[in-house]
Length: 234
Figure 1 (cartoon, rainbow, N blue to C red):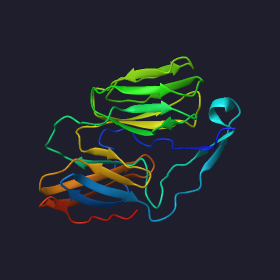
Figure 2 (cartoon, helix red, strand yellow):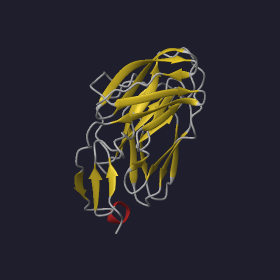
Figure 3 (cartoon, one colour):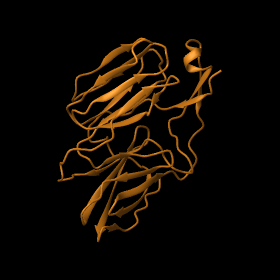
Figure 4 (spheres, rainbow, N blue to C red):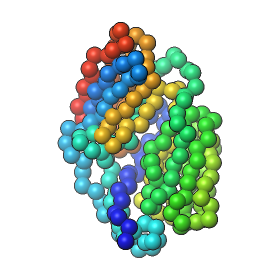
């Protein structure tokens, strides 16, 4: 029997500006010559996951899936999108080649960054039928069935936008495709950490957004390549 897997959230927003502000995450930021590093954290443990019993596709999905609206390790918040707001530097993003897999009947990763026009490979590693269904405003919608023999489709999005994606075959499967406005974006790792490209001296606004928790903005100053510590507690 397959190990139980965690899967996240129904989405709460679709706007390119990463949604309206809400009481939000905790961020600790340090600007270094190698980049701006930080961490998004929570002040309390994430809520208990919901158990979804699987009645079909057990070979691919296992007997149950744990649905968690918020996840992370050691107090960190995973899958938060961070960005510098109002960047004048509009040089193209240099994100790693983006891939979103359908593995164990979940989207992995659940949040993926792409640049406008960059190819996103959507995989089906489960050997069962999935469906890739996006809800877009600025970009054409996608609604593609992926039978078990179709292991990859390639998508491109021209306009910056936060795009929810779901699988209509497995109702608990949700993810997010973030088409970034510029290269100063990142998605937090399981411990809540992130790294942005290095910044010249100046005052900047950092936004952190999560599909369930909303967004929070804060300002910080880079001087001599270093930013004073910024700590926002959720």
